[in-house]
Image 1 (spheres, rainbow, N blue to C red):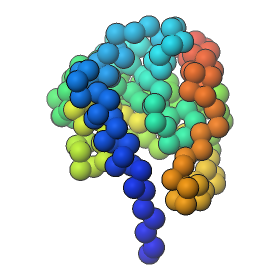
Image 2: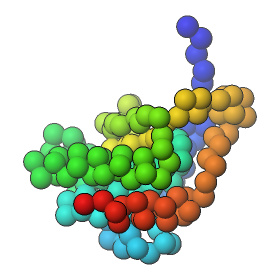
Image 3: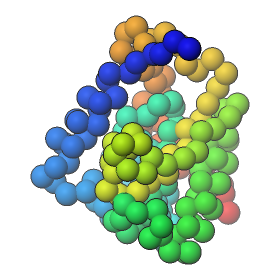
Image 4: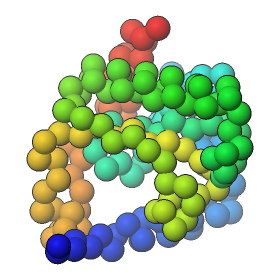
Length: 166
């Protein structure tokens, strides 16, 4: 098996640490804002969690479902938090399907720094829409990931889709 390397991933992780090391947890700060304010990436707020666009997405519509509580240990999530995380991942899938019609999804969490977590001290769950052929040579050869839509345009579309969900 041949290996394809992504050296920019470590640069991305380091850049997050640098940007937020003196400012506290940006996910905790995101929990405090209003999703209707278009100036932030927050898409949905629940009682125990929130859903936010990933600032460094793997694909259009890459969302994260995050508990309001600042914790890094998956086993410390309460039953209410666990339930709401799963419900909000389902809502995210419905909204993303409505907006982008993806052919599949990746859903998961990177638990701990060695697993690839760019933010390892505030647990969060990713849902990434996928399409056949959405991986190409650009990230490998050009160290560039092509995201074809502005994050705030994506947010507007997702806010509309979320407003239709029950």
